[in-house]
Length: 246
Image (tube, rainbow, N blue to C red; front, top):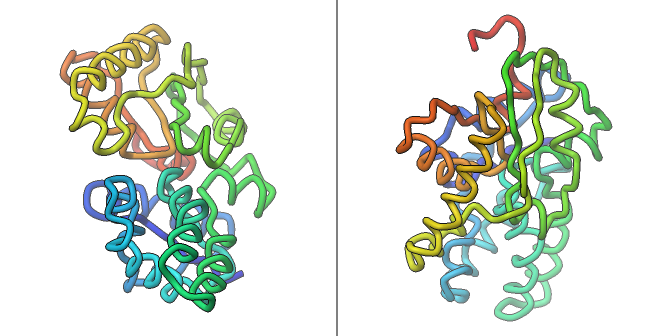
Protein backbone atom coordinates (compact mmCIF):
# COMPACT_ATOMS: atom_id res chain seq x y z
CA UNK A 1 0.00 0.00 0.00
CA UNK A 2 1.33 3.45 -0.95
CA UNK A 3 0.94 5.47 2.26
CA UNK A 4 1.58 9.20 2.52
CA UNK A 5 1.97 11.24 5.68
CA UNK A 6 -0.03 14.47 5.67
CA UNK A 7 1.69 16.08 8.64
CA UNK A 8 -0.24 19.40 8.53
CA UNK A 9 1.47 22.77 8.67
CA UNK A 10 0.73 23.17 12.40
CA UNK A 11 2.49 19.94 13.32
CA UNK A 12 5.33 20.51 10.88
CA UNK A 13 6.01 23.93 12.38
CA UNK A 14 5.44 23.32 16.08
CA UNK A 15 5.22 19.57 16.79
CA UNK A 16 7.40 17.69 14.28
CA UNK A 17 7.89 14.89 16.81
CA UNK A 18 4.29 13.87 16.19
CA UNK A 19 4.91 13.28 12.49
CA UNK A 20 8.04 11.29 13.36
CA UNK A 21 5.97 9.20 15.77
CA UNK A 22 3.44 8.37 13.03
CA UNK A 23 6.24 7.17 10.75
CA UNK A 24 7.90 5.15 13.54
CA UNK A 25 4.58 3.52 14.43
CA UNK A 26 3.59 2.58 10.88
CA UNK A 27 7.06 1.30 10.04
CA UNK A 28 6.95 -0.89 13.15
CA UNK A 29 3.72 -2.33 11.76
CA UNK A 30 5.52 -3.18 8.52
CA UNK A 31 4.56 -0.27 6.28
CA UNK A 32 6.62 2.23 4.31
CA UNK A 33 5.50 5.83 4.70
CA UNK A 34 6.25 8.54 2.16
CA UNK A 35 6.43 12.23 2.94
CA UNK A 36 5.49 14.35 -0.09
CA UNK A 37 7.62 17.46 0.43
CA UNK A 38 5.44 19.56 -1.85
CA UNK A 39 2.56 19.44 0.64
CA UNK A 40 1.39 22.71 2.17
CA UNK A 41 -1.48 23.96 4.32
CA UNK A 42 -4.87 22.35 3.69
CA UNK A 43 -6.52 25.78 3.82
CA UNK A 44 -8.45 25.30 7.05
CA UNK A 45 -7.37 28.63 8.54
CA UNK A 46 -8.49 30.48 5.43
CA UNK A 47 -11.75 28.56 5.16
CA UNK A 48 -12.68 29.10 8.82
CA UNK A 49 -12.09 32.86 8.62
CA UNK A 50 -14.06 33.40 5.43
CA UNK A 51 -11.25 33.44 2.86
CA UNK A 52 -12.73 30.66 0.78
CA UNK A 53 -11.53 31.81 -2.62
CA UNK A 54 -8.00 32.15 -1.24
CA UNK A 55 -8.19 28.59 0.09
CA UNK A 56 -8.94 27.11 -3.34
CA UNK A 57 -5.28 27.00 -4.55
CA UNK A 58 -4.44 24.94 -1.46
CA UNK A 59 -7.29 22.57 -2.22
CA UNK A 60 -5.99 22.17 -5.76
CA UNK A 61 -2.42 21.63 -4.56
CA UNK A 62 -3.47 19.03 -2.02
CA UNK A 63 -5.25 17.03 -4.71
CA UNK A 64 -2.19 17.21 -6.96
CA UNK A 65 0.39 16.31 -4.32
CA UNK A 66 -1.48 13.33 -2.86
CA UNK A 67 -3.17 11.99 -6.00
CA UNK A 68 -0.94 8.93 -6.45
CA UNK A 69 -1.25 7.51 -2.93
CA UNK A 70 -3.61 4.79 -1.79
CA UNK A 71 -3.86 6.11 1.76
CA UNK A 72 -3.18 9.53 3.26
CA UNK A 73 -2.66 9.44 7.02
CA UNK A 74 -2.73 12.50 9.25
CA UNK A 75 -2.32 12.99 13.02
CA UNK A 76 -5.00 15.68 13.02
CA UNK A 77 -8.73 15.25 13.19
CA UNK A 78 -9.34 18.89 12.31
CA UNK A 79 -7.25 18.83 9.13
CA UNK A 80 -8.64 15.44 8.11
CA UNK A 81 -12.10 16.91 8.56
CA UNK A 82 -11.20 19.95 6.48
CA UNK A 83 -10.04 17.82 3.56
CA UNK A 84 -12.85 15.28 3.70
CA UNK A 85 -15.74 17.62 4.40
CA UNK A 86 -14.81 21.01 2.95
CA UNK A 87 -12.39 20.50 0.05
CA UNK A 88 -15.19 19.08 -2.06
CA UNK A 89 -17.45 21.99 -1.09
CA UNK A 90 -14.85 24.53 -2.17
CA UNK A 91 -14.13 22.69 -5.41
CA UNK A 92 -17.83 22.56 -6.23
CA UNK A 93 -18.34 26.23 -5.42
CA UNK A 94 -15.31 27.73 -7.11
CA UNK A 95 -13.68 25.03 -9.23
CA UNK A 96 -14.53 23.10 -12.33
CA UNK A 97 -15.93 19.60 -12.83
CA UNK A 98 -12.49 18.07 -13.31
CA UNK A 99 -11.20 19.59 -10.07
CA UNK A 100 -14.28 18.41 -8.18
CA UNK A 101 -13.66 14.84 -9.31
CA UNK A 102 -9.97 14.95 -8.38
CA UNK A 103 -10.64 16.49 -5.00
CA UNK A 104 -13.35 13.96 -4.20
CA UNK A 105 -11.14 11.00 -5.13
CA UNK A 106 -8.25 12.22 -2.97
CA UNK A 107 -10.42 13.24 -0.03
CA UNK A 108 -11.84 9.72 0.22
CA UNK A 109 -8.33 8.39 0.91
CA UNK A 110 -7.63 10.70 3.87
CA UNK A 111 -7.66 9.03 7.29
CA UNK A 112 -7.08 10.37 10.75
CA UNK A 113 -4.50 8.14 12.48
CA UNK A 114 -6.86 6.13 14.68
CA UNK A 115 -9.21 5.53 11.75
CA UNK A 116 -6.34 4.24 9.65
CA UNK A 117 -5.05 1.89 12.33
CA UNK A 118 -8.41 0.44 13.35
CA UNK A 119 -10.39 0.51 10.11
CA UNK A 120 -7.77 0.13 7.38
CA UNK A 121 -5.03 -1.90 9.06
CA UNK A 122 -7.42 -3.68 11.41
CA UNK A 123 -5.24 -3.37 14.53
CA UNK A 124 -5.74 -2.05 18.03
CA UNK A 125 -2.68 -3.51 19.75
CA UNK A 126 0.24 -1.77 18.04
CA UNK A 127 2.90 -3.06 20.43
CA UNK A 128 3.11 0.14 22.47
CA UNK A 129 4.35 0.48 26.05
CA UNK A 130 3.61 3.58 28.11
CA UNK A 131 3.64 3.04 31.91
CA UNK A 132 1.78 6.18 32.96
CA UNK A 133 -1.63 7.30 34.17
CA UNK A 134 -3.28 8.82 31.08
CA UNK A 135 -6.56 10.54 30.31
CA UNK A 136 -7.86 11.18 26.81
CA UNK A 137 -9.57 14.30 25.43
CA UNK A 138 -11.59 13.74 22.22
CA UNK A 139 -11.23 16.89 20.13
CA UNK A 140 -14.29 18.47 18.56
CA UNK A 141 -13.46 17.79 14.92
CA UNK A 142 -12.58 14.16 15.54
CA UNK A 143 -15.61 13.64 17.74
CA UNK A 144 -18.27 15.54 15.82
CA UNK A 145 -17.08 15.82 12.23
CA UNK A 146 -15.10 12.60 11.70
CA UNK A 147 -16.99 10.61 14.34
CA UNK A 148 -13.95 8.55 15.27
CA UNK A 149 -15.89 7.27 18.26
CA UNK A 150 -13.96 5.00 20.60
CA UNK A 151 -11.17 4.14 18.14
CA UNK A 152 -8.52 6.16 20.02
CA UNK A 153 -9.62 4.64 23.32
CA UNK A 154 -9.48 1.12 21.89
CA UNK A 155 -5.91 1.79 20.80
CA UNK A 156 -4.96 3.26 24.17
CA UNK A 157 -6.52 0.39 26.14
CA UNK A 158 -4.24 -2.02 24.30
CA UNK A 159 -1.08 -0.13 25.32
CA UNK A 160 0.98 -2.15 27.79
CA UNK A 161 1.61 -0.57 31.19
CA UNK A 162 -0.90 2.25 30.72
CA UNK A 163 -3.38 3.29 33.39
CA UNK A 164 -6.12 4.83 31.29
CA UNK A 165 -8.64 6.88 33.27
CA UNK A 166 -11.86 8.41 32.00
CA UNK A 167 -12.02 12.17 31.56
CA UNK A 168 -15.24 13.66 33.01
CA UNK A 169 -17.36 15.54 30.46
CA UNK A 170 -14.84 14.52 27.85
CA UNK A 171 -17.01 15.66 24.95
CA UNK A 172 -16.95 19.29 26.12
CA UNK A 173 -14.92 21.65 23.93
CA UNK A 174 -11.61 22.85 25.37
CA UNK A 175 -12.21 26.37 24.07
CA UNK A 176 -9.49 26.50 21.43
CA UNK A 177 -11.32 26.40 18.10
CA UNK A 178 -8.48 28.03 16.16
CA UNK A 179 -9.24 31.73 15.88
CA UNK A 180 -12.13 31.35 18.34
CA UNK A 181 -9.63 31.52 21.20
CA UNK A 182 -8.30 34.81 19.79
CA UNK A 183 -11.61 36.42 18.95
CA UNK A 184 -13.42 35.27 22.11
CA UNK A 185 -10.68 35.06 24.75
CA UNK A 186 -12.93 35.36 27.80
CA UNK A 187 -15.25 32.56 26.70
CA UNK A 188 -12.29 30.46 25.58
CA UNK A 189 -10.56 30.90 28.94
CA UNK A 190 -13.70 29.86 30.84
CA UNK A 191 -14.03 26.72 28.73
CA UNK A 192 -10.35 25.96 29.21
CA UNK A 193 -10.67 26.35 32.97
CA UNK A 194 -13.44 23.73 33.02
CA UNK A 195 -11.32 21.35 30.96
CA UNK A 196 -8.25 21.85 33.15
CA UNK A 197 -10.28 21.10 36.29
CA UNK A 198 -11.60 17.92 34.69
CA UNK A 199 -8.10 16.78 33.73
CA UNK A 200 -6.75 17.50 37.21
CA UNK A 201 -9.63 15.56 38.75
CA UNK A 202 -8.51 12.36 37.04
CA UNK A 203 -5.10 12.36 38.72
CA UNK A 204 -3.54 11.68 35.34
CA UNK A 205 0.15 12.21 34.70
CA UNK A 206 -0.42 12.71 30.98
CA UNK A 207 -3.17 14.21 28.87
CA UNK A 208 -3.57 12.63 25.45
CA UNK A 209 -5.41 13.92 22.36
CA UNK A 210 -5.42 13.40 18.61
CA UNK A 211 -4.98 17.08 17.72
CA UNK A 212 -1.95 19.06 18.84
CA UNK A 213 -3.84 22.34 18.53
CA UNK A 214 -6.28 21.44 21.30
CA UNK A 215 -3.55 19.64 23.21
CA UNK A 216 -1.40 22.79 23.14
CA UNK A 217 -4.30 24.88 24.41
CA UNK A 218 -5.06 22.60 27.35
CA UNK A 219 -1.38 22.00 28.11
CA UNK A 220 -0.91 25.76 28.31
CA UNK A 221 -3.60 25.98 30.97
CA UNK A 222 -2.16 23.03 32.88
CA UNK A 223 1.33 24.50 32.67
CA UNK A 224 0.38 27.96 33.89
CA UNK A 225 -1.10 26.35 37.01
CA UNK A 226 2.04 24.22 37.44
CA UNK A 227 -0.04 21.05 37.68
CA UNK A 228 2.79 18.80 36.52
CA UNK A 229 0.48 17.11 33.99
CA UNK A 230 2.25 16.40 30.71
CA UNK A 231 0.75 16.29 27.22
CA UNK A 232 1.31 13.69 24.51
CA UNK A 233 -0.27 13.24 21.11
CA UNK A 234 -1.91 9.85 20.55
CA UNK A 235 0.73 9.02 17.94
CA UNK A 236 3.55 9.55 20.42
CA UNK A 237 2.03 7.21 23.00
CA UNK A 238 1.32 4.54 20.38
CA UNK A 239 4.87 4.84 19.03
CA UNK A 240 6.44 4.36 22.46
CA UNK A 241 8.00 1.00 23.31
CA UNK A 242 9.79 -0.54 26.27
CA UNK A 243 13.09 0.49 24.77
CA UNK A 244 12.19 4.18 24.87
CA UNK A 245 12.98 6.52 27.72
CA UNK A 246 9.69 7.77 29.17
